[in-house]
Image 1 (tube, rainbow, N blue to C red):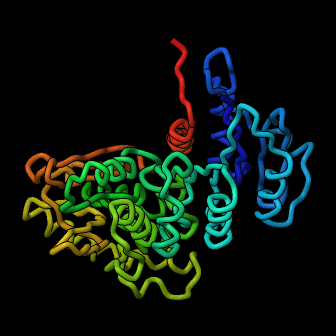
Image 2 (image 1 turned 135 degrees about the vertical axis):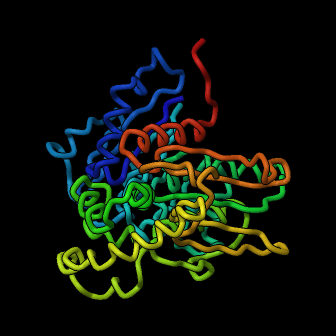
Amino acid sequence: MIQDLFIIGATGNVGITLASQILKKGDTDASIHYDPTRLFGLASSKKRVFSPDGVFPDQLETNSSEYGSLDDLLELAKREYKSNRSTLVFVDVTALNEPMTEFHLKVIRDTPYGIVTANKNPVALSDYAVFQELTRHPRRYGYRCSVMAGAESVTFLQDLRDLNDRLHSIEGCFSGTNGYIATELEKGRKFSEIVIEARKKGYTEPDPRDDLSGLDVARKIIVLARTAGYGVGIENVVLNPFIPREYFSGEDVSSFLNRINELDEYFKEIVAKAKENGLSLRYVARMDIIDGEPKIEVGLKEVPEKSPLGRLEGTLNKFVVITDAYPEKSPYSVEAPGAGLEVTARNIRRDLLYLLPERENIL
């Protein structure tokens, strides 16, 4: 069985890395796989290229055509895709919100095709009913890469529900950027120096406030909460930014960066206070189930230095879950890179494996 892929966002960093990995790792080689991959189509924000016999990434620049909307891509697939001994999966590596959510719904409602997404917006910002409709059939919809670049958080919570293992809490550090800033602060460095350096290294968004707002972390805990079966949205999250709210005014990035040294003394004091008490500062997302209801909070928090989150360093992410089977003394936890092109692309490929209807191994 051939697995045909139509990658949307193919000229972005993740899309380029994914296509390159697929070719370099031999996913397309039928002598290695009973279920080889074929690149049926590639699309950027304006151009697309496709062929029932497969395409190569460079053809998006040399042999492509313009398209008008995501609906055009879906109609193209319906018209040109032949399902003889193959399945078609759309791969979403964009950062689009509403138009991509509508596209996901149309694929799930109107076609037999599958979707694998690294884009968290359709599963975090949609209505809970939409989330349920999209994710009802794991063999058609994979979204593990929406949190922790695909480490075992989404998949663990999916299994947890089927095993009827009662959930007590989810806690984690889900921002490599904010984790890096927190651990560098503990080394005695100035906050302004860390942020400016992190921006130069590409650890932050072009506007570091996009990371420091905590909104991305809030979206990730929403994905996890929904996966665990709780119908929450952004309005249910108590969101405390990494820095005071006054710094999220309408000023431009340069003006913001020119005055963040105002925060150096503030962070020096709170880090020192935490250390005196044997605590570490971490930017934490947490959901507690209290009397059957989820309580979610995101913000800078003091945690014990020897705790799973306190031991976390640099840009690594951590996911800690307490259930009946995994009590507080021995919780389930995963530590992994929360971002990175190679790891994200690899875990998209893992998600694709789970969408194979008849996965076989060559012995």
